[in-house]
Figure: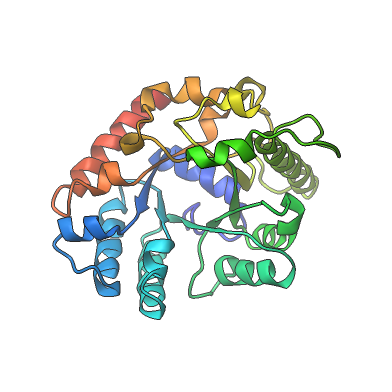
Length: 303
């Protein structure tokens, strides 16, 4: 049984195993309309399914992580969700760690239902980790966070995203409470850091495997940002129960993989290098070559 599928390991342990075996590159599965046309596929649920399953086949054995963007399937309604279910099934069977990029966020029974849909073993939409938005506070996400921990799943909370519209809110200073004086982005990161530390201490007390040192709750930090302007000092990263980082923005969006250590500092070893268009635009006949090239480049930076 591989680290990806071992049920007794935390998501952080499985992620660390993937890094060791396959590196830090994550291939996005984003069936844009224009990409489907470039791949000579119809802009339909069937086309998105064919596209996604082909990307999974190309990624299998080359990387350990894929990240389907749920919105590109959701736009086709029920047929799109059926297509996504088949893509997810292929990815699980291929032994890939799957991050569902759904960016869900709510509270109470609503967010509990999101967790049930995406983070429950055996669910048609089961993934290994899910992106969530904490606009209503990190505490509003307790239900999916608890479900993820109980099922060996992971969660990535939006903290500092690359879109310019987000900067005003994410760089805003918290007025009071335990995070008073910190930016909103920093407050999310600090909450996640604290939760990973608490979970790590509990797991260590139960004699669980904690050798990987990666927490199971991560954050999204864009690779094109000056994170210091968001109040985040990357040189103050925790050394135990480290926080994983899902890092969009490399490749097509302009982030340079050679700057990985400079961008993320002490978080660099836990960074998931997420790339979509820079790989997918190679087309159906050259995508394997594009993945191999990017794996080699990311591996060079890892040293």
